Image (cartoon, rainbow, N blue to C red; front, side, top):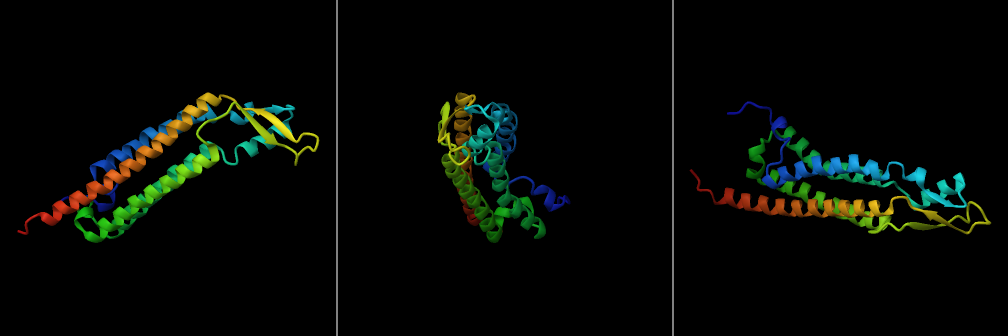
Length: 204
């Protein structure tokens, strides 16, 4: 019998697709957001300029243009999607459920499937929010309603820096979200097939 503490062994998902999802999610997606995201969006507020080019109008219109910065939104997305899996592994560790036993026990299998379904729901919700907050294309100009700040300037035309790079980055983040959703769906099917295999094993 392996004497390793179950909590340590549960760091890896019990499915092959789940392990690939963790690698893809934890490495590629986080690296892409942390490194390239900072390069594309890091100095956006500094280079966001409006007509007239006044600091207070630039700040006001940028806050209108970006109710939440993309880096913060995607960081919250990554953290929120990790929560269901973390809660399940905490439950499994408290119940002393070994990694190989997760899919052999009906209750732990149901809880794990629920955690995967929650990840899917959170990813779909993030996709919807991202489409409403940032859209799919970044226009080179943004028409800002600055009437509340300066009565003489009803509409201020603002220039969005590096709009083409931001469009490419947005497309990549949408693609990452779709890939993770598909991986979660595939993981559920893998779980069901494994459960059928356990149920069909002859009793010795």
